[in-house]
Image 1: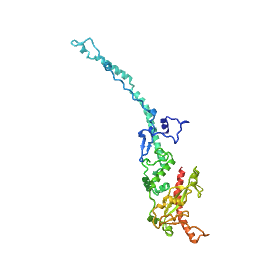
Image 2: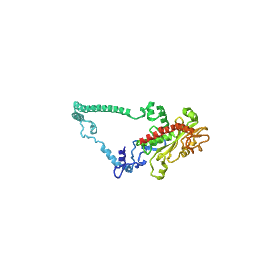
Image 3: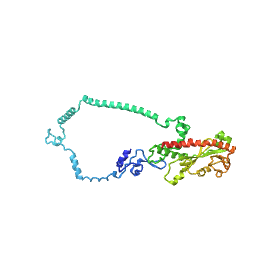
Image 4: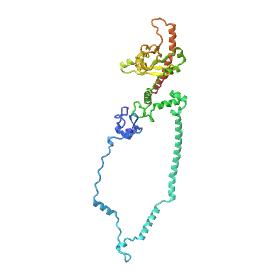
Length: 407
């Protein structure tokens, strides 16, 4: 396809012409049948489209019609096309005029002409046996060639079946164990339900691929980024905030004994990023905790371990309190009597909704040593709060690490 495009554009790759991502071809150089329109109104090229409309390919102007033929020239041609009849001046039988004698054909002459033509055609025709011998040889060659082709087709079918068995496709992961291992979905039905909800289209026309002018992605990086953005737009509108009854029903026994009013456990996570060239942006992204440029985000989980909220990413120098204020967590539908468990960095008692309490480890303050009650409380909160860090490590960071490896 690349060679067809270069040939159609009349360009030779060299020092004066190079193919790069910045090279563009105007849409006016394509036929209307080469362009398709997706559901979102986005126009894209078909798979085998090749530019064909150029200035040097314009058709020549319409030729001038030939002049009308003169009447006397047409009559002269008609006279030449009519054969002249042979005239006889002598009549062989009395009582007949020369005009009527001209209509009588000469029987002997016609018979001699027919016999001469038949003898000539018989002499020119080859014998039947010689003809069959000449045809039999190429027929055998064709039969042998057909047998070789049938054998080649059978070998290719066997190889194709062997390759299909090793292809990484959905048909290989119909069991729940294989689906859980490869995708993280608990079973095959859940995967199909999620895929139907996403609705990428029969040929993926609903997915806008990243940095790609084609309908299909050019590489694996483009494919991963495009699908991550597509899933974010589709899944981002779903409400994953659980009701108070669902939290109570799935709450573990450890939380029921110590903190039965816990609604969510919150924690901030950081993801390393590249160092920008701008010094101002670099100072905003630098995290003293990681000693690197990072992006920070807020993650909330229920006592059962399900992720209930994920914020956008902010610069690494931002504080935990600012992330809570900007992320929209305070606008979530808390019930009166709910409580939030967090680390010491989340001093949120004055900004939480009315009726919502905060559980964080106690501070030492002006005392030289913690009291036994504060030590026990710190251990209980740390023992329960570790679940949110495990959820971030297993579900969030592991997912980001897999994406980074694919790039």
